[in-house]
Length: 341
Ligand code: BYC
Image (cartoon, rainbow, N blue to C red; front, top):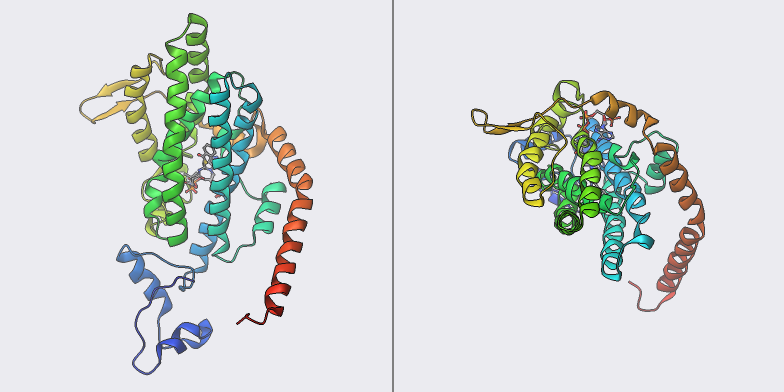
């Protein structure tokens, strides 16, 4: 396991310090070691001492993030069999598979904090942990695959690139790969919309309709406004979040408006205009009551998504049992092997 080495105390060999139960390392002020790493913009690693609240907050965020990745497979999985060509089908399958991989990296990162993956999934299934609001909207047409890639993955990139510099090492490292893949996803979404926008009038209208439906929910992905975000301040002080919800939302708007012009599609906000004084786009008011309703479970697809997820989990029980049996058998074989250490 990774850990930061502070050098041995004058009276203790290094191995004693690192291997001792926490209560016995009285020569060290573990809290101040933690703070020193945060202040120096270093990385906290699984073996390092950390405040319980830091550990809990990370498990909360990483688990929610992992749940979002696997629930996020559903709206797009819905279109694999209906993608308009073999090429589109292959690309979409690869993308949905990537989301499963992202879930895997993230559950593994949460496990380094002492969480059990099975417990996290139980908390998702019994509603004790959340997943992103965005996946509670339906995917009505093929153009939704474009809008999700362009807007949802675009928002995800803006939110997640700063997480590559998160103070917790395993989360930050997982995010590097996730962001590279999200970047591919965003481009495939842009390309779908570009083809539709430049196609027949009916295709253009379908692309515009998808953008109209996904724009506001994509802005809500960044979370409540800063004044109503209970976790942001502490999360930023710990170097988990690097920017506030509103700052990232603004960054996304600034990045997306010129892209919409390149696509020849309109964003459904009549108040969007460049503000030279601020150096940002001004935009219309977001209806955050919708976000809070969706988070509470009252979005258009919440019940369906959870029902599908629980069923998939139950149907997959035999795979988990087989994997456990295989691992147990392998352990026995390795233990019995004369070359085993
Ligand atoms: N949906 O104090 P706040 C993806 C919750 S994956 C639902 O601002 P925080 C993709 C929040 O959890 C997208 N809940 O919280 C995947 C908190 O509740 P708790 C997911 C939300 O943590 C597949 C409460 O509201 N991305 O893009 O400081 C295919 C107060 O909020 C939402 C991540 O998870 C929401 N939109 O900031 C394609 C990224 N917003 O926990 C794409 C990592 C807020 O106190 N996570 N809540 O009960 C983060 O960056 C942060 O956790 C958030 C929220 C910005 C989301």
